[in-house]
Length: 119
Image (cartoon, rainbow, N blue to C red):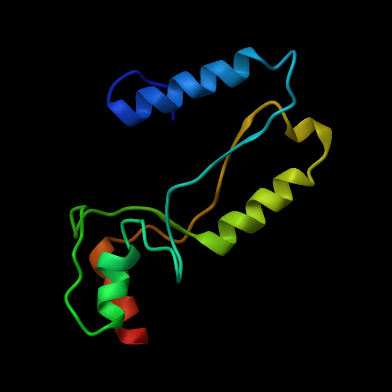
């Protein structure tokens, strides 16, 4: 997606990107971008303690995002593997941003239903 100054988070990410890209003659870098995330033990996320954590206890999930809006989520161990892969990448992989693959796009409700079925 193109860098934008619209919205607080997109503007902050765009400015951060411009800063490290502006230092490319002095600093070796690669950026790994990922979607929202989840995993056992990760309590501070859209699907964390108040969502999947509650479902695991047999209780109703509390979401801070719309339950029926399709959204991308990444599993934290997959993010770690992607980061390690990027750290071990050849030199020509540096100097740019990489987008982290994620699970198929689903709504939070669908993911919570999967969690409930697994619990």
